[in-house]
Image 1 (tube, rainbow, N blue to C red):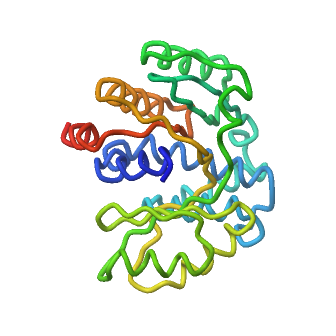
Image 2 (tube, helix red, strand yellow):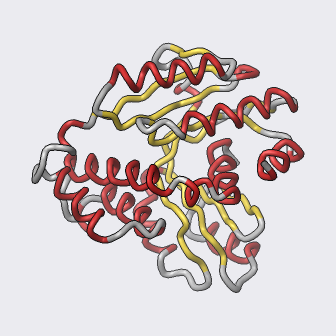
Image 3 (spheres, rainbow, N blue to C red):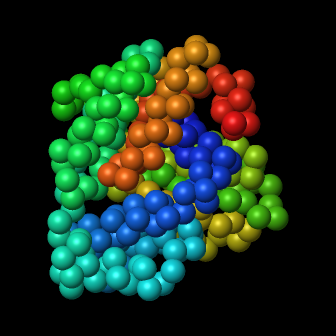
Length: 252
């Protein structure tokens, strides 16, 4: 399973989203606004917006916040129109690749913040295409299993076209081809004994870089610091981490 999938699971276990809920709602609102701006303001007619709204609901974002974010993106208000989507590529410790997606109203601030974090984290920014050639856009769904065997759920999701499945205790992370994502998500919504923790378009690496302990710890810190930046929406990596380093990071 991809480094991003592993990182998503780590964040869930560590409770980073709950600890920084205000920042999380800001990022969710930005994603909703941009999705509404680029397509229909009706989630049923705009799959990207549907994903954004569903993820916001999964994080208990208030309905009023969601509706305001849609209105901004649809042009009822100024905030949504000011946002830009920018993607940065970087090399991290041990030659790992990073794709850093942003939603920002200030590209200079976004670039400066990312450059600072990457440099201090032992990496450097890369030219467009230097890292992304190793990644493919796919659908990534994380299910929280409630009252069932995660292994059985994993077998069921393989039957609806999953490319890869990873189980971490009660969490099941699944990747789907981009072209099958909308259909697969609809089918997953009908599953019993599971809750969709998140569903997103993700950049999944074709090859991984396994890190030794010190580089793995450094990379995990860099991932966390990048995602703490207000302008950063998602970070993807092809880093693979030793289990003992993950356990230490979760215990912090």
